[in-house]
Amino acid sequence: MPRPEKIKGVAIHCSAGYSSIEAIEIYWWDILGWRKSKGYNAIVDLDGQIWYLVKPTVRTGGYSKTSSKSTYRFITNGVLGFNDEYIHISYVGGVKKDNYKIAKDTRTPDQKLKLQHLISDSMLWLESQEQNTEVDFWVGGHRDFSDDQNGNGEIDTWERIKECPSFDAMHEYLHYTSIDRRLKLPTDR
Image 1 (tube, rainbow, N blue to C red):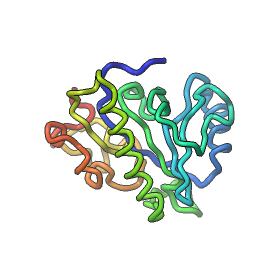
Image 2 (cartoon, one colour):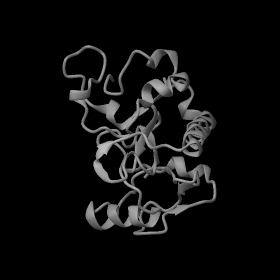
Image 3 (cartoon, rainbow, N blue to C red):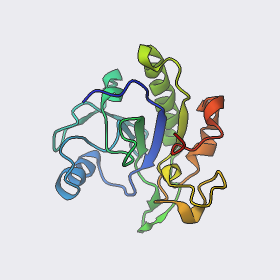
Image 4 (cartoon, rainbow, N blue to C red):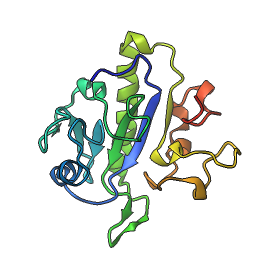
């Protein structure tokens, strides 16, 4: 399925667990029933290894360690209602190892570095796509797609649909966000 003409940015996610890439793919396929698309364009493993999406419609084996610029072409299941407008990048972890219900920033130094690499890489890919030349680029976390119910311009803790990615990605990656998008949430259209 082709991307729309304008991609608005990158959504950062966590896997909310410590499973292998194969186990994550099986969960999406068998439990969530995702047959048309996988969950992310790229995933950073605990050791900093990047897994790139290469086959979105297979049960397992849809990711490769080999870098592929085509990974950003695929629409994935990242944030309901925003899948086609954003590139989705995840890291393995994001919860306490002994309790998956407690969100925790578990990124290793390698994961932090590789997340930044993937954001920069996706921006370079977008710049190479002629249809994306004048887009207000935004980087944030899955939790930042929640509705601002009280209208204060921030997603308060009680407004979040989930804690993913377990850290404030919007603030941490603000330097990647274009000036026009800094005062807007992703739900501001």
